[in-house]
Amino acid sequence: QVKEKGRDAIEFFNEEMADKVSRQLVMEGDLHRALEDEQFSLFYQPKVDVNSGKIVGAEALLRWHHPEKGNVSPLEFIPVLETSGLILQVGQWVVEEACRALENWSERGLWSAGMQLSINISPRQFRRERFAADVIRTLDRYRLPKGVLDMEITEGVVIQQVDEAIDTITTLTERGVSFSLDDFGTGYSSISYLKRLPVATLKIDKSFVRDIIVDRNDRVLVETIVTMGRLLDLELVAEGVEQAEQLEILRSYGCHSYQGFYFSPAVEGDKFIELLLSNRAKDR
Ligand code: C2E
Ligand code: MG
Ligand code: MG
Ligand code: MG
Image (cartoon, rainbow, N blue to C red):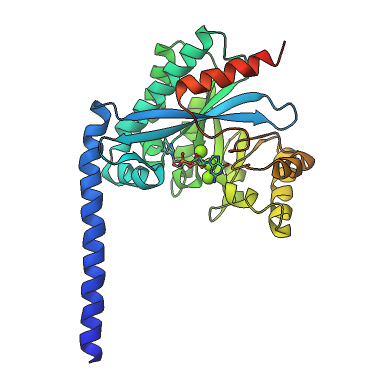
């Protein structure tokens, strides 16, 4: 009896796993075509100054429009890009596309000095030997000045090879690329990485911001991260701000800037240009 049940459970488990594997294989096949068929795009989410309410930068977020399934969430397809190695090509496309956007916004006078566009870099992409050299070549090709591009990394990029990671960051920092530690606080040893990595910005993960109004523990954690970050001369960005009250709390703690649906979700290029235009109008 027990044996029977056990076997059923194993078969069920195997079936489920096989199902998952086959779905991933199908997705991988689709992703192979996605780049040449131009199914990827970058959306841009404004990064806003907590005090002035003005746009100080943006985060580029990858979007995949599948010909039949429509938009697929990055949470589903980024892991498949990672395991298949396709992230290397797609990641380089993201760098290119971000540089193209920066060139375009600068030419139109929409990208003032001090504004930064952040792109997300996956661990596998970051650890590739030629990563820094490829990025620098692309920045040079678009003649982008120092200080306009930022890279969001997670502690996943430094696991095991901290010295190599520091070298890569240093090389790129010399070419004017800055680094942000993304999803700060969610990893295993965020603080110890902070000690070793030469990053300029901490991004407070949205899981801490979500319940900040009702959860005293989250408030304490966020206030502590902000205080620590400020003492270390880091820039602090809060993710996932959806309500005025959350913003108010972050402001009272001294957080510098934020992203979130409260101001705007990530939007397509043309829509982002409209946001930049209305941002500029605030100066007049
Ligand atoms: P992330 O870098 O932490 O990006 C923040 C995520 O929070 C984005 O999800 C964004 O749309 C979402 N978000 C922004 N504001 C709010 C808000 O107010 N409330 C809530 N609930 N969510 C908000 P998205 O675009 O689905 O991206 C998910 C993850 O996929 C990103 O997390 C990042 O790790 C990865 N990703 C996205 N684009 C790229 C890329 O070009 N390359 C790599 N390697 N990873 C990427
Ligand atoms: Mg990010
Ligand atoms: Mg993040
Ligand atoms: Mg996050």
